[in-house]
Amino acid sequence: MRRCCSCLHALVVSRVKDIGIPWIFFLVLIILSLINPLRFPCIFYDYILEEDIPFQLESAYYDARKSPSSKMCQAPSTKIHKSIQDLNHSITEADLEEDMKRLFVSPGGIGKPQHCKSHFDVAIIVPYRNRSEQLTLFSYYIHRLLVTQEIEHHLFVVEQANEQPFNRAKLLNVGFQEASKLKDFHCFIFHDVDLIPLNEGNIYACTRRPRHMSVCIDSMRYTLPYCRIVGGAVAITKRQFLKINGFSNIYQGWGGEDDDFYRRLTEIGKFDVIRYDPVVSQYAMLYHPREEKGENRFQFTKPKDDGLKTLEYDVLDISLNPAYTKIKVQI
Ligand code: UDP
Ligand code: BGC
Ligand code: MN
Image (cartoon, rainbow, N blue to C red; front, side, top):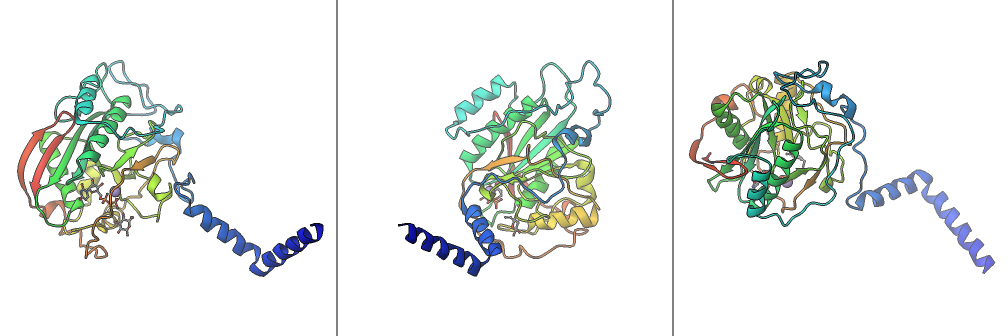
């Protein structure tokens, strides 16, 4: 037995020597990264630390260095916030309606603090087609978060009515135009319907620079696939969005429109894109099969021509749901 063990030991040592320590380390890393979901932090990027978030926020009425006047709500705090541990997937339309009443959210998905004036006024724009269960769950969780954060907000769902391949970016442009007709929103958050923010400290307001919000997604093992990614959820001020002429309108089908948006942000806007601390920017993605890839997803557009300035669409219907305003469009 003893001899056998020492044989085994010798064998392992010789194998390790053959393969080499760096290779063994590499193999272990691959095996670990295949176990999903792994709660690796999103490393290697420059993030706004949790305690600095209040100093990065921007709005017409907010200055982190001054204490707010008596009418204003409390300034966003950096104390440790709660996180959602388990999503409740069985929320129904009726639960949603009930919850909106409890949260004092008005029909159309308009929420504002009851006893103070919010520092922020945000339009949330969601591109949408045929994902009703996700929409119910998203609406439920997003209003809860915004009410907790005392953020005045209006949730818009822009639904593509035609059967052509889905055009996420164009729908977001439509959302921007239609929301701006109703009110002079200072801040826009363009948000996928299947992303549920898990941390209360992830303040849903605009920052001095455009912000990529969905940093750590469970289905992506809480890591960013590449540095220039701005898919999922983005917060941007009206002024910044106008400067870059919005999104491109040409991306049909899955992919590419967000990469084009990154180019607009950096090349036209000359903006640095920022991100919040991974501690507060965790998201759950609701399951869906992969959509069909767009043929032109690697093509980049000339932003000066294509975008808000060339946007054409027909609004078919605007309806008020208890939790959102739905704008049905032909694009
Ligand atoms: N979307 C939708 N219906 C579709 C395709 C996309 O509502 O048939 C919207 C939805 O808001 C979704 C977003 O577009 O979250 C992005 O698409 P998807 O989730 O398929 O892409 P992913 O980001 O997961 O790669
Ligand atoms: C696509 C993006 C997408 C990203 C992450 C890229 O190849 O062009 O649209 O957000 O992959 O899935
Ligand atoms: Mn998705």
